[in-house]
Image 1: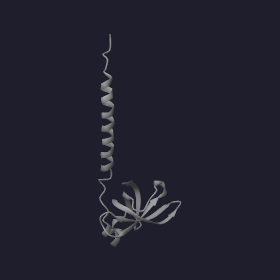
Image 2 (image 1 turned 45 degrees about the horizontal axis):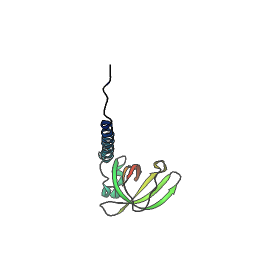
Image 3 (image 1 turned 135 degrees about the vertical axis):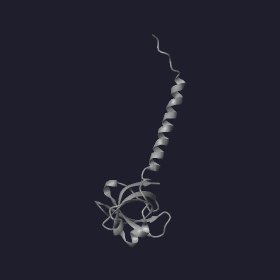
Image 4 (image 1 turned 30 degrees about the vertical axis):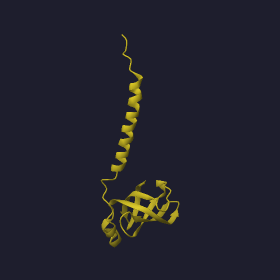
Length: 124
C-alpha cells in the first residue's frame, strides 16, 4: 500500500505558522506573568512598612543609582514609573542581573524587615 505524498509546500507553510504562534504565546505569557500580583502601595510602604510585612507586590520602576554591593547582592535606589520619590530595593546576587541607570524594570518584591526584597524582575 502506497502512502500519499504530502506536498513540501505544506511544510513550508506550516513551520513558520507554528513558530509565529509559539512566539506569540510566549510574549502573551510573559506579559501576563505577575499580573496577578498587586502593585506596591508605595505611600503605605513609606509611611508604615510593617503593615505590609510578608506581602508580595509588583513594582514598575526605573533604576536611579546603586547604593551598595557585596557578594550577597546589591541595594538599588529606584523611582516608580508614574509616582514621585525613590525607594530602596535589595537585589540578591542569585538574580545575576546587570543594571544601568535609567533602565526600566518590573520587579516582584516581598516586604520583609521593613525593606523590599526583589524576588524576580523583567527588564523593558
